Length: 198
Length: 198
DNA sequence: CAAAAATTTCACTATTGCTAAATTCAATGT
DNA sequence: ACATTGAATTTAGCAATAGTGAAATTTTTG
Image (cartoon, rainbow over all chains, first blue to last red; front, side):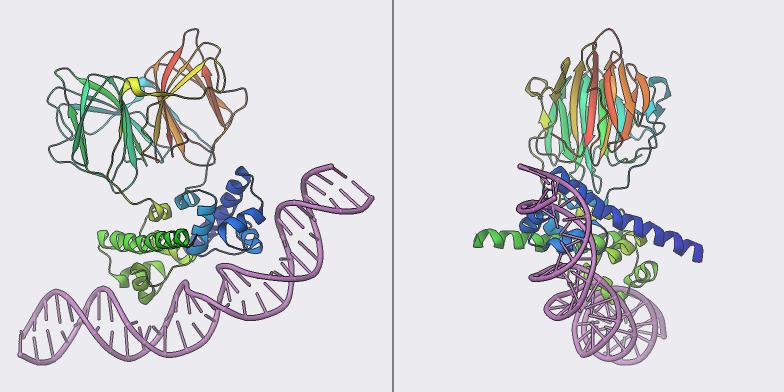
């Protein structure tokens, strides 16, 4: 319990200094001085300095003012820290076949396990195959993809589309959606999700 | 100015109540009472109630405690609200050619503008073409892709890989990376980034 | 090197996050 | 219908610190 508490505490501290460091990175990327950011955000120079160096923790109100001034979504501040990449390649013959929900659809996971932010999947749907009769969604994130061959039917928020080879799509995952093979030959597509779902 | 200030103020208030509402949603989804969450998070029942109803704004410290207790990444609280999708399809003939940095590379944007979380790009690199001699990175996010034809050279965090048709990759964008055509014929690939960069 | 610009430090106060207890509300059992 | 229990909300108040503005220090520029 005590060791566990200690671990959590360490984690917190790292996360906090990351927010400040990211804010500074973003500010410097935009070539702003603290004074300029202070003017844009309506906060004081001293506070911004202290926040960036992790000396104080900004309220959400202040944080919003800063991220608005930096033209940056607030969520970017809370992304996981970068770590060295390994096992980032999946060879064609090493793809993992995924559990098949509806029949007439083959899904292969093309992503390594080590990356949690994005995932790439190869899907082949036989004629008549579909993700299901009912649209579904995911709580957060986004999806996109492109058609390699064949025709895909796609429904998003009640609107239906037919896509052919070379067409592409992107939508937020909260929107209700479903998809199916829209031709009389199999459709082969690349389907990408963020964050990783599988 | 006055009307503009007012608009910003309204936006802030909406965002704040969204955080609380999302926390409640998440808590109910996990079938926790306020008391149980209080115990898990080490915060008081009264505070949690007030946060969920937007009566008070939690410090980042408290917010971290709550999100840890709810087993939820902090960033989820700051996602944009879902909105109806429109213009989510890009037809093959409507792709936009992108500004070409290095020579011998063609990039086409396959994503609609309306989705900011993910972006899909078709890249064709002629033999000898490269993203540049120096690895680069992006402050946040992730990238993935797959090879349609040809061979791609990819360097991530100092490690080099050669990928052929059907192979795929994924890595966090903070890692230094560069890529090039690794064969004597053009390489054709799908490149996906989250969040959107272009 | 001097001056200007940028950042950090400092002392202090206004603000409110947060608590514990009281109250209210909702559900259940007799 | 009433009593009890559990869950959520409200209340009063204080300890902590977010945030300020000015001074000091550091860095950059010419």
